[in-house]
Length: 215
Image (tube, rainbow, N blue to C red; front, side, top):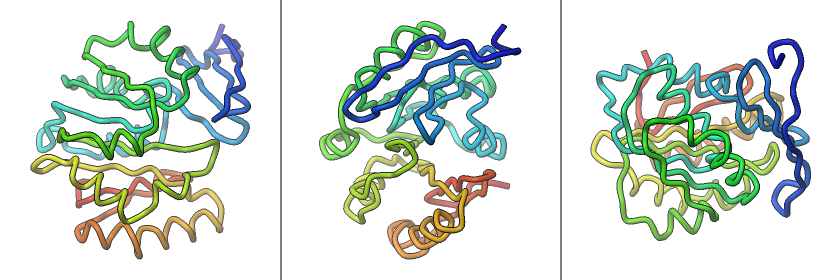
């Protein structure tokens, strides 16, 4: 039925997200706020487009980190669409979203996922591990909090990357204002920390990368 009409599973209001709605759409878990889509399984299109352009033979993502885990769209599509084997560490600040992810999504995945509940800033500050892939997908509704745009934070993300590690940083670019802000961030901040930075326009978002990684 979810291919014909959205099936609402649950709603919630939390300190971080006053409006949360979890539905089934096209057979996938669909997590939305007032102005944003947080997750949609392997139909989470911005990362789906980005991953389709990656050469997985040249990028061995054995150990991945997802900041802003939501309903686990990133590990879900890496496993189900791209048939990757990996260990995933996820960080999700909203307890209700983490509850839903643990209830509905994690049991469907065969790759191991270690889900941390808490703020991504704190996690990045304390983490001493390195990862082959770091996905930065932290939003509050349709806004990236300013602390996730600082040079200090970007440098800490850089420290989390292992040899040949890849950082993918999701940014909105769906309006003239959002596009200007994202362009400014890429040129004046992101490229300063990552001199070989590149980006991919994925229809309303830019996925920024610490290095050239797409064909």
